Amino acid sequence: MKNWSTWAALFLSVGLSAQPLKTFQLTASEDGWAEMDNGTVLPVWGFQITGEGPAKYPAPRLIVEEGDSVQVSVYNAGNLAHTFHLHGFGSDTSNNGEASNPVLVQPGNTEIFAFRAAQSGDYFYHCGLQNPVHSQMGMAGLFIVLAAGGEKTAYTDGPPYFKDYHWLLGEFDAAWHFNPPQAGNLPPFEPDYFLVNGKSGDALGDYNTEDVAVFSALDQLPVFLNITHSGVGRKEVIFPYLVEASVVVRNGEPQIPAWPVDTLALSPGESVGLMLLAVSNGEDSIRVNYYAPGTDAFLHQNPVAIFIQHHSATSEPAARGMVQILPNPATDWLALRFRSAAPKGKTSVEILSENGLTVLRQEISAGEPVHVGELPAGVYVLKIVDENGQVLSVQKFFKN
Ligand SMILES: [Cu+2]
Image (cartoon, rainbow, N blue to C red):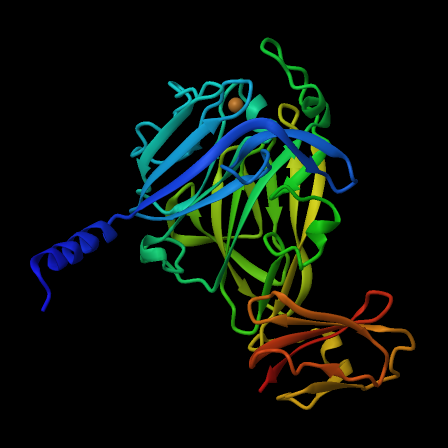
């Protein structure tokens, strides 16, 4: 028999779960660093989860659900004052450090920013001081508000998705990082690193770069791609023929009806959510163009890998039929049967889980089986690449 206090506790927990409190503890400091794709290590200022080391860029993702009450406490371990500003966030954010009247966190102090996540969408938080210097030094990260209840929909009661990706676009001027501009006239901003989630160069072309490269296999569509621009110059995102992209959310506002795009223009501070549907199977790139602030001169293009393997798509990559895998379903091993001459050198075999994670990667010689006995039962994607990097086959198999 439940007594009164048990019922009261149940009642209270139900009451609280209607509007949960999400708390985050961040430390702001000027002691971080970030390695660029050419090996250059840049000093960064930034935020980090308290106790998890020096400042990092991007700042940690803060993920909540629509309707949550959110409390972010910011401790300043640095030597300069900082703020916590939620850029582009709705009106229900009375003390989040709006730029017009920012709540300063002085060195050695902690301030608490409390607000309600009233509207789903991707936003970014940053330090707004000496704009754009502190942001540009690395003090920016994604604030992600999922649909109510954490549903996998673009917004509450919006279109459903299978997987979601969240990109933070920015750029770094190395000279600023080595010699942070002081108060007064800013030196020209001349970026030399062009970033997606802090990554650049080869990392963006590799579809194993999980938080960036868009990978969708089997029926894992549609993909919900959110792109947030926390940088300075204008950006353009160009979608390949492989996918049909349509804007479903813009700056937290649902777009009804969704509007199809093949080139998306983004101004600084904007955030756009797109639904991607497969047109065909294959590998390509989503291209991100970076333009100079002021002159709007084209500066750089980043190709970000996209890989679509969707069994109901109408066309198949030419490579598909070059290798037969036996048996399928597999139990302990897979044999590869090349329909034309087998590669003379080593073949690289990679097995990806349904959600795109690499679960096995090995080099084999022609005729050698691939051992899959350790894999849990399920559906996998097998990718075979020859020693020159040419993709010979991408196909799914079942493991018993
Ligand atoms: Cu700051």
